[in-house]
Each structure stands twice: as structure tokens, then as C-alpha cells.
Amino acid sequence: MDAHHEALRHWPTATPVWLDLGPTTLNWRRAPDGEALAALPLGDAAVGARFFAGDRPTAVELERGIDFVEDALMAALPHWPAGAVLLSGDARWLAGTGLAGTDDTAGFTTVPTAAVEAAFQRLASGALGDASAWRDLPPGREAAARLLVLRETLHHLGLDGLHLWRGRPA
Image (cartoon, rainbow, N blue to C red):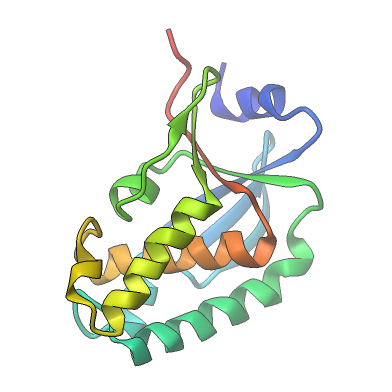
């Protein structure tokens, strides 16, 4: 069974929406048909290059990035379906942000919003000068951009977390 159909089976009353991250865009697609809901200018490479001068953003850079991501999300909000659950098949949401999740029996790893908020708080603390906050966060402006985009997406859409497809267990 593919990820789209497994998501429909696993969340029968929700609308599964797939989050596809590219270097220049973040796409929302409805499962299982792949209908495009929105294409946002929130790719990790684009956001990282536009707002972060180095591998670790400063407080001013992070604030400017937050404003940009929020504006893009708010403009796309009318395309977000009610009762949606956020899914992705992109492991960079974990490896590229320093996040961990909990595996379930259906083939998904759930990264709760609280874990994303905690990682984002470390990013913000590091940007404010707390050198110890960078521990456990991967370096690089693209990694910082991924965490920023994920945090703002979960926060502004009021979601419980991101569900990553890792494949059907044997």
C-alpha cells in the first residue's frame, strides 16, 4: 500500500495533506490524488539564502525570516482544508532539523508540535547569543530554514505535528 492510501486508512476522518519541500518552494498536495493546494515560496535553500548570512542565523535575520514565512502562510491559508493532517515523505524534516519522532505501526513517524517548538526555541536562543542552544541542532542555513518553515506551518495552522512516511512495516 502506498503512503497516500495508508494515510487515508490511518486518518479516515481527516484530509491528508502532503508537504513537499523543494529548494525554492513548499508545496501542499491533497492525498490521494495529489491535487495541488498551494505552492509557497518557502523552499529551504531560498529561505536560507534570502535571510541567513551564515550557518547560524542572528536574531534580526531570524525575525525577518519569521515575518516572511508568516506572510506566505497567511496568504495560502484559504487553501488549507479543514480537518487536515500534515504528512511528508521527506526525511530531511528529521535529519535536517535535529528533530526526532515516534514511530507507529502504520508506517509513519510523528513529530509532535511541542518537539518542533522546543527545537525552534533552541534556534531562537542561539540566534540571541546562547552558544549552548546550538547543541543538537544541525548547522547550515538550509537546516535553520527548514526548522523555521516547519515551526511556523505547525504553529499557524494549529496542527498537532508532522507525520512522516517511512514505509509500511514488514
